[in-house]
Length: 280
Image (tube, rainbow, N blue to C red; front, side):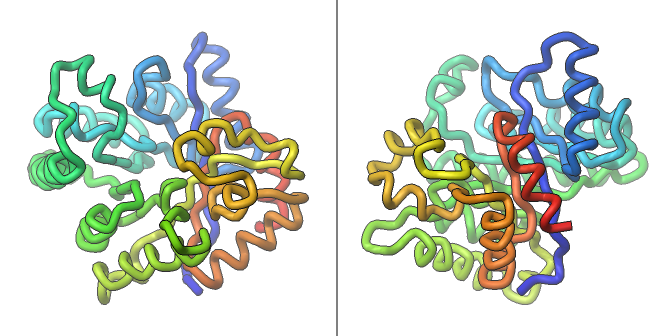
């Protein structure tokens, strides 16, 4: 069990026009979400300008979910973070990841490298960015979210993160049932965090949502995971059932795993709002 209250985030994909973006930002807040999030992928919205624009018409928190640290430089990142923090009145949550799409590294001429190399780059970016932000007027230090599923990322998060987001892969370990795999990863984070574990907010990324299995779009995670559909629907990040049934499942996750912060993708925004109503 965790003392953290439930929080809910939604990731929006495209800006569109100024008026359309502002309207969708207002809708996110009106539906009961606590955080408007923007991912960091080529072809999607540019995170920082989108969040600043959303700040003008909302009072909720605003997050990057998550930036690809492998293509960033701390000097430029710290400058962006400091001003976005100020322009959003301190509502920014800074989400960082190691990057996992080779084409995005190729687009900026950066080596993709090994998982270990990308993780070391993430740690270096985080350390230097925090140092630079500490020297800024007003000490603009947003909470840090790290995201992923690997043990090395979990151990880094245990030392450094305010929030950890479990990716869909957190429920995937050969030879283990999905919830057993997820519980194991929570335990790795707990051991790495030690006395500060209760201060780390646990976020679950929801990849699919539907009232029944036949209404789920599992194509992407089926291909990435190699699991069959019967296994996929047991993943913590795949939610099946009525709003009340899903709410009960999330209450159990909060009790058993300490997960209190749930993030969904824009296509699920309206459907998941019905779940939120059962958890307020």
